[in-house]
Amino acid sequence: MSKQRISYIPLEKMDDAMRAEMERCAREGTPRPESSAVRAHVPAAFWSFANSWRDIFHTGVCDHAIKELARLYVSRSVKCEFCGNQRSIKAFTGKLEEAQADDLINFEKSLKYTDQQKAALAYAEAITWRLETDDAFWERMHKHFSEPELVELGCFIALTMGQQSWLRLLNIEHHQVMAGTGASMAPGFETAEALAKAKASPDYWAKQDASPTKAKSAA
Image 1 (cartoon, rainbow, N blue to C red):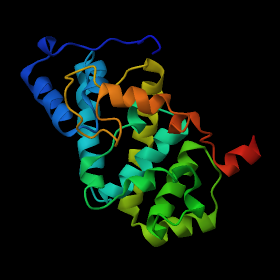
Image 2 (image 1 turned 30 degrees about the horizontal axis):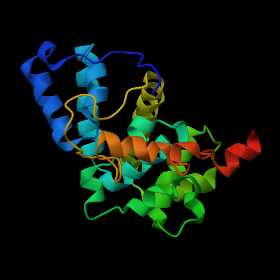
Image 3 (image 1 turned 60 degrees about the vertical axis):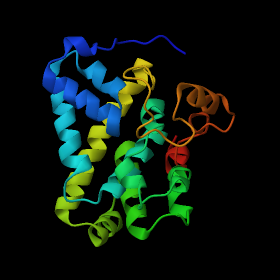
Image 4 (image 1 turned 135 degrees about the vertical axis):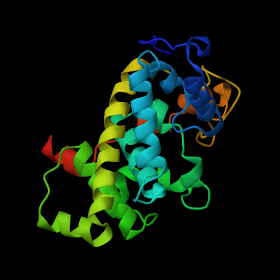
C-alpha cells in the first residue's frame, strides 16, 4: 500500500463528543472511522463534515437511497477507493441492491435503475464531469425532483465530490482505526484480508475505466 499522507488522531486525544461520533462511525459507518480520524486534526473540520453528512445525507428532504447512488457514482468517477468500498446500511437495507453499484458509469443504458435514479445519476455526472446542461436536462431534473430536493442533492454531490477527491490522495485504508467491525463495508470487503483479496482481483472496480462516454468524446 502507498504511504499514508496524513496521520490519524488517536481516540485518547479526542474529547468525549468526538469519541462518541467515532464510535458511531465504527458501529454504523458512512463515514468509516479512518476518514473521521484524519479530520479530527481540526475539530471544526471534524464537526463540519459530521454535521453536514448527518443533515444532508442521512436525513433531509431527498430520498437517502438516491443520495447513496450519487455518492457511489462519485466514488467510481474520482476513484476514491476508501469511499467506494463502503455502503450505506440504511440505503442497502431494503432499497438498493449491490448489483446497482456495478452499472453506475453506464447508468443511462442500464436496466437496474428507475427513471428517477437515472436522473439523479445524470445530475451527479454533470456536476462531477463539469458537463454542459440544456433545457432538456433541467426539464428532466424538475420532472423527478422538487427544487428543495435538487438543492439538497446538488449540495450533497458537491460535498461528497470534494471530500472523495481529497481522501483519494491520502492513501488511508479501512480496518486501521477501531478495527474489528465491518459496518457499512461493501460485500467482500468486510475484513482486512477480504479487502486485500478483492483489491488484487483484475475485476476490481477501481482498475476499470470510469469516464463516461460524453467525457471520453470531449477529451
